[in-house]
Length: 326
Image 1 (cartoon, rainbow, N blue to C red):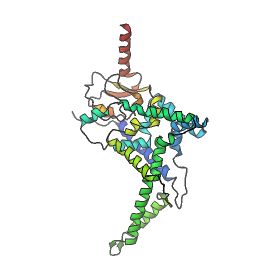
Image 2: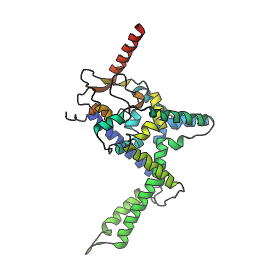
Image 3: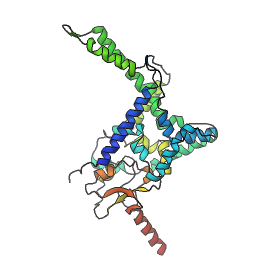
Image 4: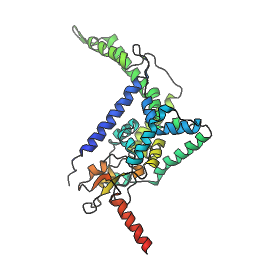
């Protein structure tokens, strides 16, 4: 059976992820010192939207900054709508999503590895451990908070490498000045380099002793997506754990048409969070990113999202009632 047409909501989700990812990069560039436009406000918007930042600062400092109240809105919407933030907003999650798309392997292998694993509880233990540290004034969230980790990796590894490579390339063209006759490459590259120098490249590049370690960690985190879809989000991310706790019983739920479903398991192959969309009563909303990939992969259109208990919850309730009646 041919793969069904990708629903419009999936394209909207992809556009949302791309938009927030580009916004994060744009705001990151505002923190870079340039000759003309000095350091700007930077990426604090994403840290303000991060409820983990507000929670960690509130527990460790016994106070809550007014600028972090936006994190409360993120948490409140998560209670109602589930972990939408991970699938639609988080720029680090968008990067993992893009790398995951490059995974190879047969469909049967992806079905076998795409379901829920008990190891996904590891992120909840990490969250509890870090919260315990905050109680004693030790704030460890900066190490694994997705925005902190992503920003630190960009600032110490990715951007310096990009800055050096671009500068070296344009410098070589300027010095060698290759061309044909009067047509010289430098005549084209120099205006481009000037635009990059004013708006993108750094005027002075800082160096850090821990760059190699950060580079190895960042590379490992990114490449692990080829082993398991969104590895960081499933097993490590403390923000994902916090949103998973808040969105454990959301109003927006997965619904399954039992008459249409033939239990082919294709929905599991493309599940980003290992949320077990196949099977009545097995869906785990605390692990679901609401990416709609399960709906897009279903050849019988047996899955959908909607408000209310949903078929999977109804079957669990019926089963519980039968057990009580025995």
